[in-house]
Image (tube, rainbow, N blue to C red; front, side, top):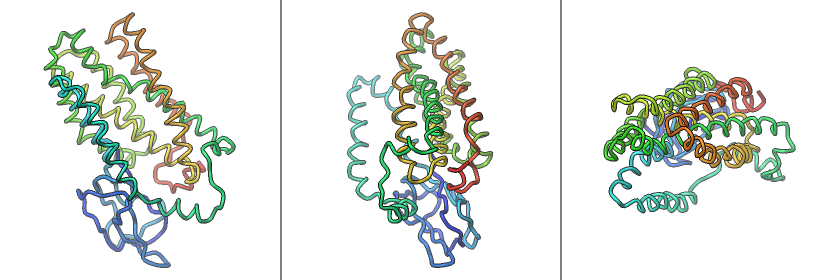
Length: 335
């Protein structure tokens, strides 16, 4: 997913230390800002590739402005695996799928040692002697917002978890497609989706978080329905590409809201509860709902019906969440 580079102070851009297209590690100094007090180094908030420089040298910048965008490696890995797994399964070496999953974990184990806290978080830690626990958010006014986001995460996972995962089974059993053709369609769709998924963050910045969410969630639902409706190979690939782009971009939308709607001190526990614990019930629970539907109606009707869940998630976004685009993090968290 894309990661915005957001300023925590006013100042003048003195210099870019990284160029567009250059790989970046989390914590790398990527730019220098001249504030009223001193020259401040701006660090990369995530690892990936610098996709955009939205500010020029000499620009007067305000706190909360997005001066650049990093394309984080997580999206790339998600899309690559979508295309790679069918090839490995087809070759008979399906156990390599487990090996591919282990490699990133080993890399993370070593890479995490070089990660540094953001300047904003470090300042808050120094200013406060008390530590925030996982359960602290339940005693704050942000408890309601966390529960609202949990519900949205739940429905988002319900609609996106199975859409691409079971498509090959559908194509082979209900369309009579040879395994080689089904695998080919998945690979083409995954590779076609790769350059498109990086545009999700840009879309959210251009037209706003809620309007961007509307576009992405609706395209996701349309891609899912089309993937289990149309039959010509070319149209199937197009719909499958839309589904992959949408499923990945939905995570960008949800991560953006979850990041911007909570103060720094509570953001970690908000993520843990809304995404990894309560919202994740939709992730592991969706196959239990889908199984009986598939047995009764078949793959196509069951998966088409699952497209309603992203639309429910969108309705909750539009109803419950404030617009956070163009706001300072402190103001967005109070919205």
